[in-house]
Image (cartoon, rainbow, N blue to C red; front, side):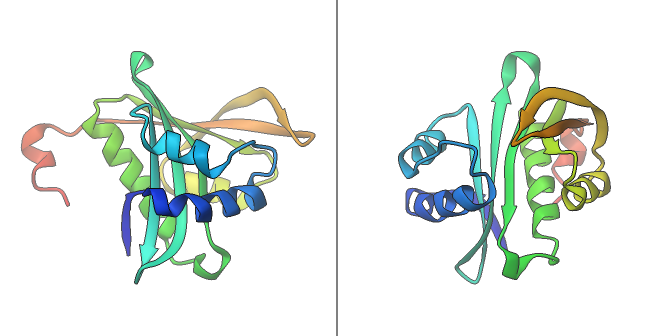
Length: 157
């Protein structure tokens, strides 16, 4: 399985999945491509044998030394194979490289599957957000990023 930056040709697939999983957003393939080309964002894609299996969208707030995981999605046929866990680990490593101190996300209160993934990945509940999506309360979860010293980072794969 490969996790890499999304490419222009991935935008239609990502858009299709966003419309299903995150219908309250107003994304289009054009907006997704704009994010791919903007250093403030990181759009990742997971591939298995050249088949798209999932994606993630991250937004960087460099002045605050933090990043927000805006979205993570794994196609139903590929769930249960630790793809989301690998994507989250990849995002943490990117945050370490950028010397960020915190990665956070918003999650629906009822999304127990996602919250379980986040717990296993080291995130913890911080607070109830003032935002409500589709009539549901949203939780803020975060993790402290601890950059590894250069001599250790070199040997960690």
